[in-house]
Image 1 (cartoon, rainbow, N blue to C red):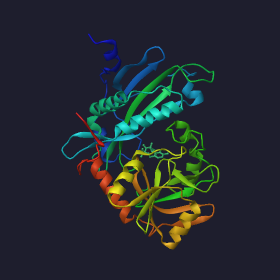
Image 2 (cartoon, helix red, strand yellow):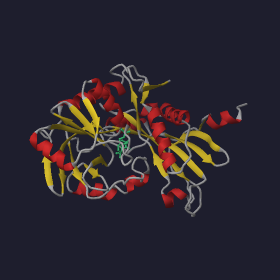
Image 3 (cartoon, protein in one colour):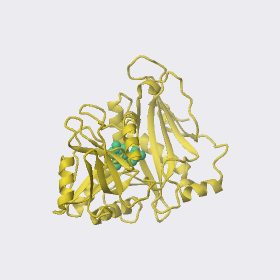
Image 4 (cartoon, rainbow, N blue to C red):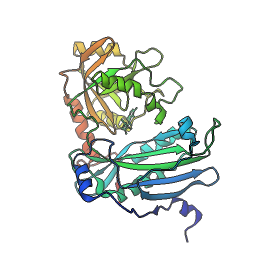
Length: 366
Ligand code: PLP
Ligand code: COI
């Protein structure tokens, strides 16, 4: 008989009545795109203030039932993560730095007044889903299984206070290239809107931040750009981050800079990994403020040679063009740069098992 503690962390596996047909799945896996198709299963874990985390389950992917008064639907008490699983050349499956995602998830939970999920349970939940959907890895080059863990407030209560019941869910989506255009370098639009202010929720991965970015993102798309760039709230001068990615700038003198973690941008795990890899390549990496005006001037003078976006979904993506209300400018040749390519190659080789992992970043799923 399982002890009470075990019953709270032992997963129940529910049979799937009708998984996606092999032929349909094969078609999806050959051309997955990003975020449009989902696997056969999902993980759910419940939380209540008297029982804590309980009832972990791997079951069929499908709609969830919520009370119309559930807090998440009114006050947006929701957080999420994004991480990828890879099939290595020897056939084994691995996650990249899931402990870092678990830690960031709990930092987001604290900011949104939600219960923390033990890191082991976060990682076990993602492993369970990857095992259940191991036949959902894309067959295209650069493909992976994107995992989306998230937590919502489920208590039916309209008073404004932290809810007393939550649901943690993990879903999975076979992923190829994030950017539909498939262009070698992306174009970004500098928004006049603000994404996050000091003391706000900018460093948390909560749905509300993304809701507020949708009008600026739609504006960027309408003007023909791939992503939106946000500047700081106070001076509208300092570069913060893109709608769903961090940024790096490479200079002719061998320095690489990225905006500092001041609480208004997401502390990206790709960003952190690239800082370490670039230092190993001998670059002088600095976390320091950089203004839009300086960026324009440096791109013009040739001091700035490359810029790139990075994130789990975007991996490492060169930025070719920047446009805003004061006109536009091109970076380098407007195409992918050498350093960007080198850092991307090193990062993806580690993630995909093409290079030994000397950092303890690769988490094998057994
Ligand atoms: N910034 C924002 C706003 C994001 O949504 C993401 C994506 O998760 C990132 C940065 C990059 O973070 P990571 O490298 O951990 O995926
Ligand atoms: C991720 O990279 O995981 C994100 O959450 C960003 C989003 C653009 C999908």
